[in-house]
Amino acid sequence: MRIDFEINQDVNNVLRFIEVKGRVSEKGSISLKGNELEKAKIFDSRYYLYRIYEDINSRGTFELIEFPDPLNAEREAIRIAYDVNPFHSHRSSYWEIREIAN
Image 1 (cartoon, rainbow, N blue to C red):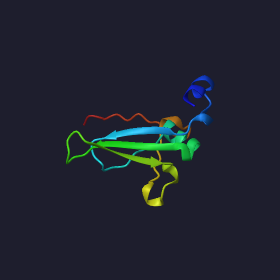
Image 2 (image 1 turned 90 degrees about the vertical axis):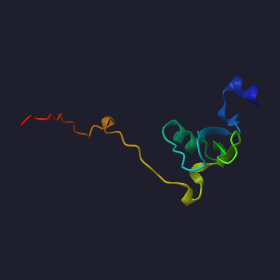
Image 3 (image 1 turned 60 degrees about the horizontal axis):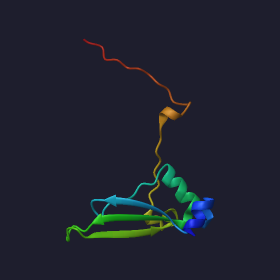
Image 4 (image 1 turned 180 degrees about the horizontal axis):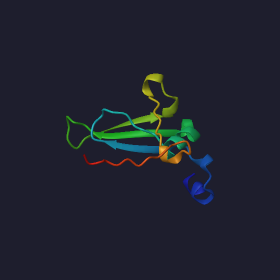
């Protein structure tokens, strides 16, 4: 299959799209935005997150969590956030503010 994909570049031949995130601990969430979020939406059940971190009790030992289809996880596993850029909107207003000496 890999050779077929390299020749044809057909994403239908890809069984699993993998996003790997390394962290220093097991705590915390993973943010998906931009290209990562778009790919998670497009490839849903074939999109996997892998999170790797070092075991704090055993230096040099790492733990890996596999998270398939993250956008369709249980409600408590997902927190929706919006990344807003006012510089990309025609509705934004811009002012220059200067300090005036007393």
